[in-house]
Length: 215
Length: 422
Image (cartoon, rainbow over all chains, first blue to last red; front, top):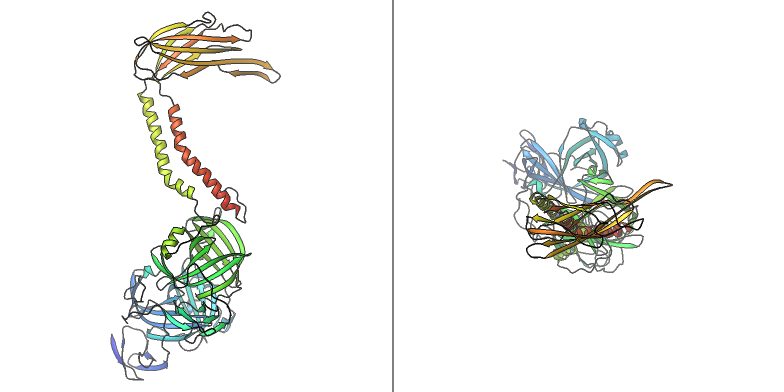
């Protein structure tokens, strides 16, 4: 844990790990941490209320490895929204636990070079469901293409590719429970690769309590 | 991190009719259809917006929105309901939600209920031996149609619209059904598990009416009973066989020559043989008569008379044999011997009295001697077969009931229904 003072509002904040970004709890400034400095690079909205049982501070497991939920980006598209929880396995290893319509998907960011035959960002608009891409040597089929934006964010974040402005978000299914999301924004392309996980298999701790519901 | 509890619902007012609406899956659902006027509202963003206005009326469902029930150890809340139809046949689909594992479907069709879950790993749905294969179950194609949404109330995780159409195909492996829905943009698979009415009644504390007909994936009761008694069936047959083998080993099966009986010489009067000593108590004995008959018949009457008590045990047997040559060649019918069991007798010495009537094609008594033997203390197979018949009687009735049930089930299928009975 390292403490910091928000360069915008002066409030106390804390970094629990090696995430480069954090959202100030008070003024909602998006802060970028470099070696010695902390600078405000933007401002984000608060995450609208939802009934997710997840919250910052939830502990969990993926493939036997423990993680902690440290941040969240709430994404929105024309017909809905979903949560992307930033989870930290250790101070330098992060994943994204997407929570959409009751499904959970754990993905990890991969280098753009792992996309073997995806279209160049300039042609991203031509992507259609049914297309097959190879990502990191594995086959995936495009199932969903939509423009998404950030509706709100909180906590510490490993990346902010979709926080500022629209992204084209492409969902792909692979063999079995494999899943990938590829985000196109301007010239940048960010693949996230992982798989569906079951709520019970995550062995969550410190879940948010919801009145009238017990697990 | 916060430890305060969180209210489970949020109340809004319909932007069209003003009626209060309770949101039960905020964040997971994107659309709510007002239960009062059925207008559809976008609830995916903090500013609620109208998607489509309706001037509908409230619709009563067996499970009202907000009903909670426990199925398979998980508590679910009904957050949405829609009525769909194929060719005018309507059914109800309830959308269930829990904050922990998300959405499930509860489908009610003609009083038959199913719990459905969207298949995430669609690559696991593969061609199978009789249709398609999923999770080690072989599914057989049952029906296909074009389903249309007729009515929507409550919350949904996509913008379902009245009039939405999907091409549906159903495969069944009772108590499971795999349902495929295809629209222009996506194909989804749902795995449905048949629920007995009791499960739904006790889960949601409601009382249900009768079921109509047989559901495509309703488990056959006779089939389930067969499955549960199968162990006992094999056990009983095994036991009967073991008993029979033990009886065979224990039986003496002692062969005693009674003598050669001459029907022609003794016509109309008894001939006495013996005495024979039958050592085993309460034994079964088999008398075998053999004669080189041709074109003749014999009827024999036996009486075993216990020398000590004078009690007589009687039995008759008959056999006949004919042969000849005609345009088809040589032919024969009948037999030149017969074996017959006597009633059980106590141990002791017995005289054997034989009487007969016989005839040949020439109208005279049989001339040939009849060789009579007695096998003492036999273990007949008859009891074993009777036991087997009794044991398989109930399973046979169940098999018949299963046949009738499956014929009714598949009679409602839109596909050819060959080889349904395993």
